[in-house]
Amino acid sequence: MSVLGWLIVIAAAISALVFYRRSTVPPVGGATPPPNRAIALASALVALIMAVYLLNAAPPSVADLKPTYQTDFSRDPTPPWVFNNPGQVAWDAKNQRLLAKMKVGEGWYGVMPVDWNGGDEFRAEWDITLLRRDAGPGPTDPGAVAAVGMFDSSISNIDDTDHVGGSSILAVFGDTVRLRVSDVNLLPKSDIGNKPVQIGKTYHAVLVYDRRANTASLDVTEKQSGASMAHLKVEDLRDLSSSINWFGVSMRGFSRNKDVKLPGHAKAGLFVDAAIDNVVYAQP
Image (cartoon, rainbow, N blue to C red; front, side):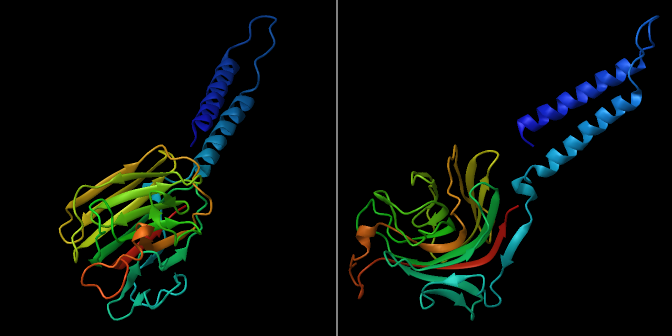
């Protein structure tokens, strides 16, 4: 419930209490009799109805959200999932998972639509394993990374410091884990973990947007041991786009690296292979 809502309820309750007490005072000689107690009780009832309405109107907390979609990929996820290049990103029927084999600059993705309007809470969790990943040619280049989370219609654009592609709330897996949020003005904010992502190790990720706290958070743990790998938060978020309405996986990396040819590689470009499983998505 909003602060204003609580103030209205408190004010109504106080008014009802005062009204009720005055109704119990015996009249002094010649004074007008006090109002009927029924009026006071009606005021209290109105305050109670307002409280119930405002409590129900308030969105549930993130902890109370019920899943609206979940899958372990034991069966074909299409629909609702959409794959723009099924030869690279698609359902892996043999291993019952979503397998994304992506190249920087190609814009391949696998996503499903969600009815999120940029303002409600949401909670998404999944398992992810990086099977292989090309590092960048320079020491400061992030190389190929897999981004999982909430995208707008610019899903296939590149996560480049000088080319921000659309609004999004993403968990980005590369050499480390980072949480990246880009608002409607395409101004990105990030929080970066300091532990290396290990190739072949499965991690469990929980991505949350809390409207009340105005924050996005990402918790990543090792799937097998439960050990914490990253706890990241981006605060003071503003103007998230109402067009952020896809959940899924896509490629991110510096666009200038899309034609890089690393030593020993037959094909130009940087690649990352990621396996996604056990997706649970919840929103009001």
